[in-house]
Image (tube, rainbow, N blue to C red; front, side, top):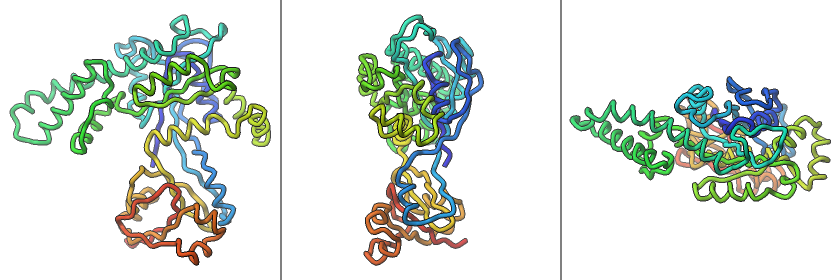
Length: 366
C-alpha cells in the first residue's frame, strides 16, 4: 500500500529541515523563499517496536518495516491559488498526497526571515488553509458548471447525486469551510473523493519550536495552534526540526545518549510518523517466518482477503483462509509453538477483520 504525505507551510518555517530529519536526506534548505521548487520525495520506515520484538522469537534472514512516502512541497504564499509565488505548481503536488503535514513556525529567530515579517502561527495557518480552500473552490466551481445543466435534465441517479455532492461542497467552501467539514453518507463519499480536493485530506499540524521550548513541551504559540487544531478536529505535534535533523545525523548509540540527556525516550519524529499513520486510519499486521519478518500497512477495518491483497492480488483472488495469532500472544508465550499449544493460533475465513498487531499466514489457491 503506497502512502504519500505532503509537508506544507509558508516559506522558511522549517519544512525542508524537517524533511531532512525524517528521511536523513539532503533536501535544499536555505534562508530565502522558494529554495525548494521541485518537491523532494523520501521513503521513511514507520518505527514499530513490535517488529524487533517479533524477531526475538522468530529469527528471520531479514526484517522489513512498513513505510510512508513524505513529499517536501515548496512554501505556499498568500495568493498561491491565483498563481502567486509558484502558485498552482505547488498546489498540484499536494493533490497527489493522502494527507497533509502543515508545519507552523512557533519560534523567533532574527537570522531566519519570516515571509510575513513577524511570527504569528494562527495568521500563517489561515493563509495556507485559505489558499487550499480557494484552489478547491475554483476546481469545484468548474466541475459544477460542467455538470449542472445535464444533472437537471438527466434521469441518471448517479449523475444527480454527483451534482448534489459537488453543490454541497461548493456551498461549504464558499463559506470558508474545508471540504472535509461536509457531512456525507456512504453513498456520497465516493463522489467527494473523486473530486481530489486539497481540503478533503486529513491534516496534522506540526509546531516547529526552538530547542529550549521543545524541552518545555511547547510555548504560548503552540498552545494557540493546539486550540485551533482541536476546534477543526485536527491534532498537533510539537517538534524542534533543527534538533531532530541533528539527532538524525548521529550514530544510533549516540542518539540514545542525546535523547536521554533531553529526558526523551525516542526522537520526536517517531511520534510525528506515528501520528501521521494514525491520521490516515492505518493499522499494521505482520508476516513472520525464517526468510523474513515483515510489517504490512492496511486500513483499519480491512478484512482478511483484502489484507492478503496488499501482499499480492493473487492472495486476495485465491484466498482460502488465514492462520492467525496476535503478536502480544507471541511476546507472552515466547514461541509460535507455545501459542498453538495455548489455543491462541486460529484459522479465520473471509469475514475476519484483521487487527492491528496480528501475525498472519495466508492460504490461497489460484
